[in-house]
Image (cartoon, rainbow, N blue to C red):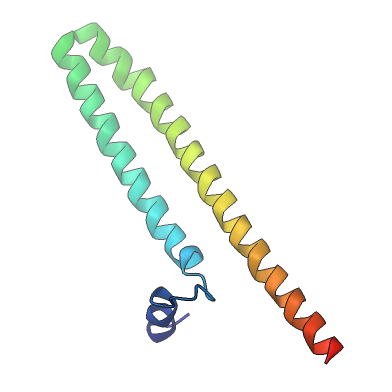
Length: 102
């Protein structure tokens, strides 16, 4: 999809075209960046509380939390993309059946 088609789909008030699939990579990258920043703040906060908690957070808690967060975001985005692709395929089937009847 080129830029002109993207913006046409973005401002399609009838919602005939989807832009979500094109934005999914960007949304995932932003979500990972936010998760990484949050993990970094968690590590800094843990070190401020105590050195032992800081080391535990740095080596175990922050990486594990980030991994679980990344998996959850990925699964959610994949589910969303799957629903959109189902809608697109259903529309194609509907249009083909309408052409057959005509």
